[in-house]
Image 1 (cartoon, rainbow, N blue to C red):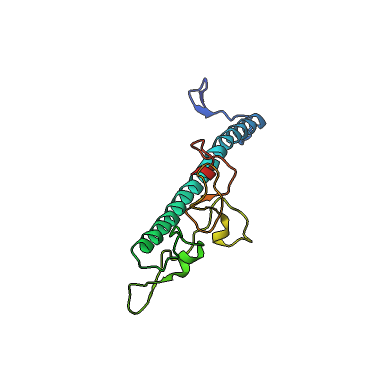
Image 2: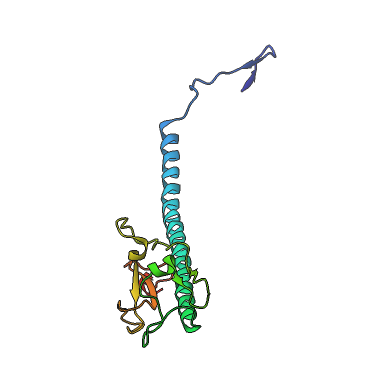
Length: 171
């Protein structure tokens, strides 16, 4: 601040306050940062859940397409089928390991998956990829899926509920 004295000379008046922040200013800043952090944490959790749900959808679609391709190959006579069987794979491992193509004179293998995707909601790392999924047999009801001689469908074993309010088991 400039002051003009009686002589007409401008002088600079110094503040008696030292530079820096007061305790009140620091506390207000910390309160604002804390409030912002509390707002971003739920958003980050929802973003993580959304990512897991996208991975679950992709994995389910990939496995289901492979199961349908196996069934179609069996119906076309490319895979040896047991009489009276549904034509669906006996295990998920078959989709990765492949089966002999009966229509090919060289008897090469047909592969339906390059690798078995893991259930992204299953955190047990002691299980193999195909053990992380729930399996439904062709003979079981959709409302009460049970394992059986074949695999008609797969589902997540997670007990959690999705962002769309539908349990992951029913996806």
